[in-house]
Amino acid sequence: MIFLGCLAGLFIGAMPGLGSVNGVAILLPVTFLVPPTSAIIFLAALYYGAMYGGAVSSITLGIPGASTAVATVFDGRPMAQKGKADQALMAAAIASFIGGTISVILFTGFAPPLAAFALKFGPQEEFALMLLAFATFIGLGGDDIPKTIFSILIGLVMATVGFDIISGKPRLIFFDMVDFQRGIEFLVLAIGIYGIGEMIWTLEHTKGGIQMHKVEIGFKRIVDNLRQVKQYFGTATMGSFIGFFVGTLPAAGATPAALMSYGLAKTFSKDGDSFGKGNVAGVAAPEAANNAASTGSMLPMLTLGIPGSPTTAILLGGMIIWGLRPGPLLFAESPDFVWGLIGSMYVANFVTVVLNIALIPVFIRVLAMPFSVLAPIIFILCTVGVYATTDRMFDTWLMLFLGCMGYLMRKLNYPVAPAVLAIVLGPLTEQSLRQSLIGSQGDPMTFLERPISLTVILLAVALICYPIVNSFLKRRKTVKIAE
Picture 1: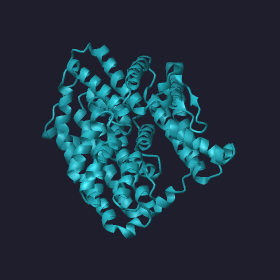
Picture 2: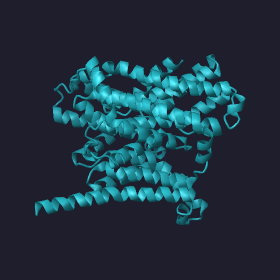
Picture 3: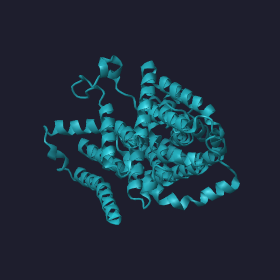
Picture 4: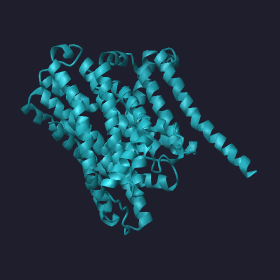
């Protein structure tokens, strides 16, 4: 069951538009044919496999298979373009293994206290955490801070399209088009900008007739890549702890964890300028975080009956159908189920890393194609992925428009990543902000009166100031040298 789940998850995660949520939802009915323990093991293994599968399309095609793999595109795709796709895929597999192993150990040893701590996070703490994630974005755009902030604001504007979450009134309905009332789906934006936009950019610079990337793969290359683990082991470990902690928070999920891990890795790296240009640590950080978060999100589901992500919400529904009662008594009433699941996590991590390393030669064959052949395949995958997810032709046309917008932003040297990340976290940030202000009757001091919230906000302010001050010092040094 573990092998089948990991294999299915790997290919489901690699397909643009599918991801773990759709994969678990589609295959949930199949699990009614087996006992509950086997069912949850299969679906959990599928969840782990899908977390890595998103990295495959992110690295080889530049299209994130799901929102959790967006940050992997930033350095994974440039590495593939430099002929280092095997190194990027290996780093993603090893980092996923590190993240999964650390998170399972934490899950096994600290489930009850961590679940109790997660309950202390109210809307104020959730807003502070989102602010911390945004603080890490400032460093993603390089030294051009104004363009980075502008890109973030564009993403926040697009995140507010649709119905107001409090009053229910429509807002920012462009040209009074009814289709905008449902908002802009994240996958439409991500696939458009990173799939279509990247394809247009590449076609412009290669004229479509050049063989893009040649990657030699063999046993020696695999061994050499394994030796390079020490380059990103610390980064992957940091991402694992961040991912697990964020994953345990209800409604947070793996996407904010991956984005936050990438931002912090870039901010505190000695070679931060190389992030976004093919730094292997930029692949390891988000991949370790999203795998750790997928395990962490199961903790509130099992111990409190509160899903930690959209995927675990479906798993929670499956548990109820199977006749199980998630919550504090689950460990006492169904120990075989709980410890069978935890035991399978250890095995699934090992199976996933072996499976992924074995399939690396298959994945990189995609890069051997001339781009004149690969471009139509990317276009078809993007179009089918968007339409299959939303079932609306409007979203397909919107994907093409956003792809052109992403191409223009890149041509004008505006960072695309902050805009994409802002539309992911925008709804979560707005919801927690407005809940906090409604609860405090509009008093903004509510964020500073709670110890956890105050601590996280101060950390966010420090992270916002760090790249700004660093950029100022660099420019001042440059001016002095010129004089």
